[in-house]
Image (cartoon, rainbow, N blue to C red; front, side, top):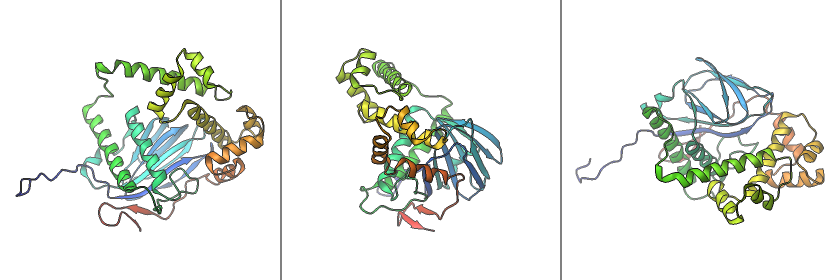
Length: 315
């Protein structure tokens, strides 16, 4: 506390620099080249299954799992079970003693933590050029005209995610739900059942009316349910599932583009290609070529998000 009586807020976790921020869609034969570096890194499995190996041993991770690599810890890994994994990778400098909690840690994220991670991804898509998730994005580069405060939002949300994970570990408990949240629980259960139904029928062509009929709910309830959970409409969500299915099939390289279009119920491969390019910026064949070039993770020049001073600078 200062002489004026004002309280200087304590910062238990401070992220000083950001070296990488990747959303990687990888082929089923992905093999990472081994590396180590003098900063922290985490890998989150968004889809698929991987084996990740460190000085401490090997770990098999699936959707929702996250592993931390401490500074100077050797690590490598590869895809398993014939799956084409999607990984979120963030590497950063943080000298706060509290982050020692993550040494050797493999965690499973709850829904609220996953949502915060996805918010980070969304912010990365508007903060950098190329955006996070773009196949050509290797290191963060500032985007001219990006949203006000976007880099600070990334820093703050990353710190918040780390704090939440440390709190949960310290408490030794999982997610709790207040008794007054009964309706929210019911809605969450309904959303999960509908989302699973859409996933199971990704190779069909469901209509909005069919979904309402299947779950005996009105159109307004269905619209509001998906708006509150995904900030999108149910048919937009369904379309994204189809796109993810197509991208996974391309990465697993078992079917031709024409066969994938047919599996998803498109009237022609031309219409499928047009929809795919509109959603991703790449034709399916271009996407396949870029994915094929990612048989191993390559080390790239590094950029950093700095705490204080100029937010982004090259090193």
